[in-house]
Image (spheres, helix red, strand yellow):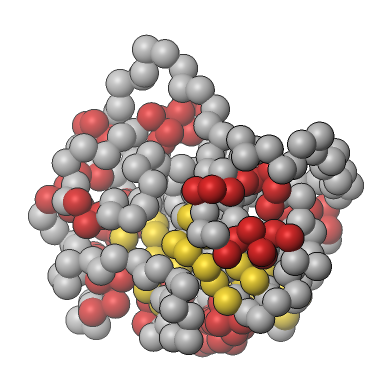
Length: 324
Ligand SMILES: [Zn+2]
C-alpha cells in the first residue's frame, strides 16, 4: 500500500515541539523538528536555479549557495562540522543503480556522500536480500558539497546521513519517471500509535537491524511507532535497538547516520544516547503523549526560516563552496 502524507499530518509534525525529553536528545541538534519530505515528487526536467544577484552578501542563506553547486568540491575528502551545520569536501556519488539498490528522486542531485556512506549503502544493499528485503530504495543523502538544503532536512549536511525508503526495491529497474513520482510506503497506523499490521513485515525489522548492527552506524531515526514495533519484534538479540531513536517524520523511510570518519578531526560527533534500548519509560512515552500526537495549532503561522548563513557554518565551508 502506498499513500501520500496528508497536509494535516505535515502540519501536525511541524508544529510538534519538544518539551520534556531529556536534554541529550537535542544536544547539538536543531530544536525544531524538520520533516524529511520523501513524499515530495520530483521532476524529469529540473531547471537550474537563476544566479544570485549578490552571493557575497553575508545575509545570503547558505542553502542558496550550496543549493547551486551541482558538482563536489575537488578537495581532499573530509566532513566539516556537525550533521546539521556543516559541509562536505571531496564527495563521492552513489551510483544510481546497483544489483540490490536504486536511487530515487534523481532530480534532487542528493546522492552524494562521504565515501564511508557510499560504502555503507553498498554493504547494506548487498546484505539486504539475505534479510528478506529485496534491495534498497535510497532517498536523500547529501548535496554535492553538503551544506544546508532548500527542502526536507535540517541534517544531511556533512555526507554521513542517508534516507532509505521503507518500501523494498521492486524486482526491476525503475524508470526515471517512477523515481520522481513513486511514493514510499506509509508504515505507521492511522492513529499513529503503532505500525500498520497490513504493511509491516519481519523484513522491515531485519533491514533496520542490519543497518543498526553496522559498526559505522551511529544512529537510526524512525517514527516512534516503528521504534515501538522494533522493540516488540526484536526477540532476544536487542543490543542494536540502542541506536534506533524516535524522531518526527520518518514514517515512510528510515534515516541512517554514520559516525564521524576516524581521520576527520573537523567532524563533530553525534552526542551519545543513554545506554539502554529505549524501549520503555519516559523517552518512548513522550512520543505518544497528547502534546506530540495532537499538538495545538499555533495561533500565528510560522514564518519560513532562512536557515544558517555562511558565518554560522564552520569557516572551512567557505573554501568548500569556493573550490573548483
Ligand atoms: Zn533523513
